[in-house]
Image (cartoon, rainbow, N blue to C red):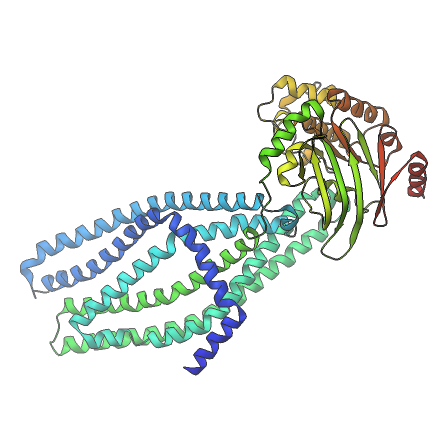
Length: 589
């Protein structure tokens, strides 16, 4: 007893008990949400258990009737036996059909709920997780969790009905037989106490490995062009085989442990079964019971042992559910994005059509968690109708600055404001992203048609508006020559098009968003100088009050800028033409 208390105290100190309570509460949210469906499924599961007990009871009457012990009931008992059997068939079919519908509904809604939570999670926090890992948590862990939410309580009720029903019937007919049938219970309890901790370790290890495997698969196929270009195919095939070998080792190790524990419990169960059978035969030989009663004893003792083992088996199920919850909570408990300023931001956007938008970075400092400072005391201003340039060495902070403006990263010190000139100002957050059009370095395109890609930022955009945006980005010239025009399939990551074409399509999409601020992150690097110049002129001509911030390396861009800021060695300064030339010369070296 003292040892047990000491163990509980240790678990409390480790925080495991608190974690378990949190996980069960989280699981309870979905149980309460779907309690009607779960209750209905519980009724179906319980009816199967009740009919199973009924089958054993009717079997007793049928055998007694056939052996002459009570032959007058043979017809009615036979009808009851057949009726229960047919009823079980129909109930099982109905249960399978309905359970599939319920499982699909719960699974889809839970996965959609978790997917939504992940997308609304603060980007800086969620970016710590690898894409493949997130995919597995949203799909693998969420799917298993949905199954646990649906089946755990029905299984508990069904098993308890079988256990209590069999025990009560056995106890009423022969208490000694009931005690013999439960003789293996202490062994099962002791073994479950030992296996619980190990099972948690194995389950956690399996889930983590599955996530890592998903990461490898996702990254391999996403970068398959690079893999081929560097001749890395044999290397990746070898790594894949290593992953398979590791998977086999984990599975075999877990199977070995489960086999050993199963061998012990099965051996004990077999001994108990022999004892029950021997005792029933002895009672029959003594003339104390009939053949039907003996059959009932054996059936009930088997049900009693099996249902008790199932009760013990519910513990591993709960452990797996808690681990799924733990992995999902790691993501869903991350900080959420701030959307409180959505309405004021939309008002600023409406006024921007007349007076534009101004951005101010005031004494901003930023560094990553690793402790590497990007810069401190940064002051940058961008006003309506200006093109503001940002230069700096690769990795110096240009893209970080744009991410700060988008509210993807958050300043460690200082403030970033955006608003109408002489009007209301808001601190930059996820709510103010509606004020920005963004063209990243990767010029990300999605699977689907050109038109679908364009309308991602404005679902109600007319075809003519899309064409005008493509013309402004100097993209309509090549799009109209395509056989299917706007309905041309882009394919994954825009692999159908050249880098320059993808850049122009990305610029067109950002222009179609009709945002008062446009951020270009090396967005014209694949264009020739003439096209680059024309695109920038079109951008300002289309909306003269638009504020444009461009991170680039080429001098042709900076010749069109109102101001240029240089980021270097943790500092940011405004530079003139000579400063730009000096930096570009250093870059060449």
